[in-house]
Length: 168
Image (tube, rainbow, N blue to C red; front, side, top):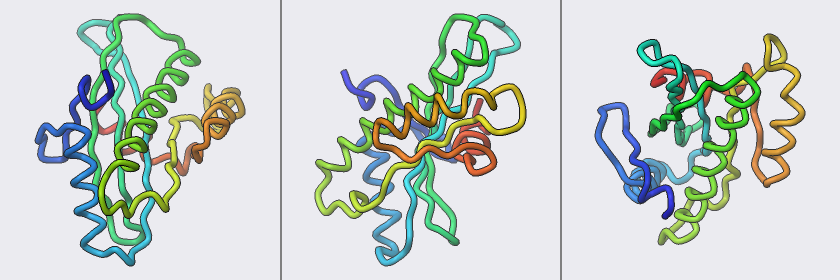
């Protein structure tokens, strides 16, 4: 079962979308100005819930950023029943982003009139040089880049630290 059968994504208007519908919407956005410069970004953020401390929510965002002119984004939530330390949470965030990225690339490759295959996918990770996650930078970015993606950390990881964070 792939991501498009297991998860649904939402847009800013809270409309429920399958991964196929998300891809179509991203293409529609690019078709408005095919000569524009675009970035494909996937980012995940997580946090515990106040009502149930052992329940963690993970939000993954798919973003197509038209450089200098805005973006179109979609997000999904995933819940895990367990308490995770900071290291495990960061690795799970990266794993969710990688899973969605692989599924997105598969969908893009099969989509007719594909304008997005010329773009590399950036994975935005909610880690940075300041704070408790600084010692994870090389490990996590190495894993992401080893799988063929571009890894971005704070302050450049707004896909995770701003967009996904907004819905956790």
